[in-house]
Image (cartoon, rainbow, N blue to C red; front, side):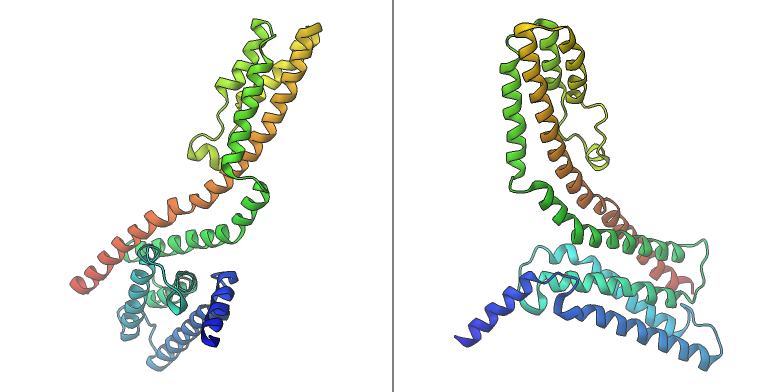
Length: 292
C-alpha cells in the first residue's frame, strides 16, 4: 500500500511539473555536461595536435556521429507522441530531453564543423539544423505561455459556448430587424450574412479583421439612427446594442482562434525544416564517405 501511495504521489508531482523542469532539470544538466565535455575535448585536441579540429579529424567524425544520432533521435518525437507511458520514459521526459539535447546540438555541430563554412551541402545541413532549433525554441515559448493566455481569454466558457453566444445574438438580431424598413434591415443582413468569425489560417494568425462586416454594420447604424424616429428608432437602438454585443463576442472568439493559430504556426516551419534537415544530413554523410 505504501509503495502504491508513493507511486501515486510521484505521478501527481509529475503531472504538475512542466516539461522544462522535469526531473529537477535533469536533461538541462545532462545537456550542459555534454556541451562542457565536448568543448573541453575540442580544446584539448586543438592544443595537443596544434591543428584546428574539423569534420575530417577523429574528433570531428566523433562529434559528427554524435550529432547525427541526436538529430535522428530528436526527429522521432512525433512517433513517441503516439505512445503513452509513465515514469522515466514518459512523454514529458521525452519532450524535456528533446528540448535540452536539441539545444546541445548548437555546440556539438559547431565544433564538428571546426568553424569552417561555405556554399555547400554541409553548411546547408548546419543552417537547417539552426532553423529547426530556432523554430523549436519558438514552440517551447508558445507551449509555455500561450495555454495560459487561452485560459484567461476563455474564462469559464468553452469554444462551443463562444460560438453559441454569437449564434444566439444572430437570432436576436434577426428578430429585432423585423420592424425595420428595408434599407435598415439590410444593415442587419450585412452582419448576419457577411461576418466571418474565424477565416483561414493566416487571417486567424494575424487577426486581420479590418473588413469585418459586423463592424461595418455598426458604423451604418449611427447615421440611420439620426434620421429614424418612433418604432424604427427603437428597433435600431436595440439592433445597435446587439451588434456591439456581437462585436465583443466576436473579439473574444477571434482572440481564442488567434492564440490557437500561434500555437500551430511554429509547426509550419519546424516540421518541414526537420524533414529538410534529415535529407541534407543524409546527403552530407554520403558525400563525406564518398568524396572525402
